[in-house]
Length: 370
Image (cartoon, rainbow, N blue to C red; front, side):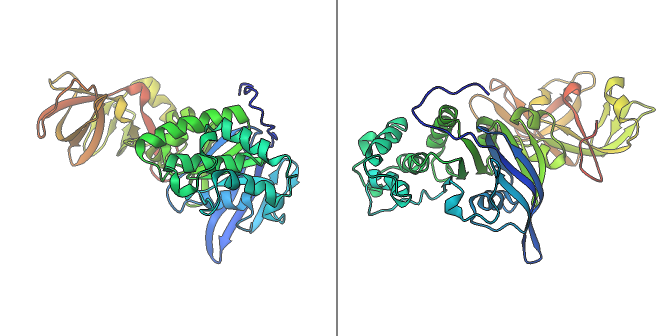
């Protein structure tokens, strides 16, 4: 990571460690043996579907949930039994949680007053953080007079003004409309770059994970599935779950068998010839799941050698690209096509896969094969 510019903000560069952390609710396992080492100044996104354990992971770090076993560390401090106010973390919630009877300036200053910061220091710190977030002209307004995006920036300012050891953000953009979410996402990334504070960010939106994170922790069923850079997670998913969760539309999956003698993959709806360099690492496997992303499916309205015949089920034209949903035998796959290409529903097309971009997963475990 490059050195951030001087923003007038004093970041405390703290690493965060989850050491074999378990959280149980009675007999229900919320988080299972979580191992995470987050470097000082990293922006980490906890990604996964509802109920996967990502918010519980965040709340345990904040002290809002107890730890059943294992240890959580901020810097060199084990914080399991430490009260939330002594952990020196700042949390930004989905709902903003602003005090309606206070002005913006009073909302931002509130955590400083609670921590008994000298009164003489407070106005200057509020002004500096308001300038950093471009909300100086809003300081005398009440929350009800603000837009959703402005409220979100006030919530961020209230967290930043404390100069905490760690920022925690629980789906902070989910209440914004699509255009504002895109803009605020960029502002968040720039802000974290300028501040340099270690940040944990919870979302179920993989686009946010891809664009914001230094590294992504993908979770499912309380377990960490993969912890890597966004690009590595997308290009080399650790298992079928990660492959299907990362990407929109998600990866296409085809069940079948590898026929090493005939050098091919054979499934109920498709038979593919495979090159030796694709098959040789898979010599020990027979039953597999083949995965291919929509952008790695090529389409043609004319038959060609090796092309697989399919029928257009429906299309989605997005302006800059078109997604074509296809019936392939009894199954269905999706391909990404150029916006200039036109496909009629029920028309016949031919497709091929980019052999260098195929993914193979073990049918039993779902793990990625070499």
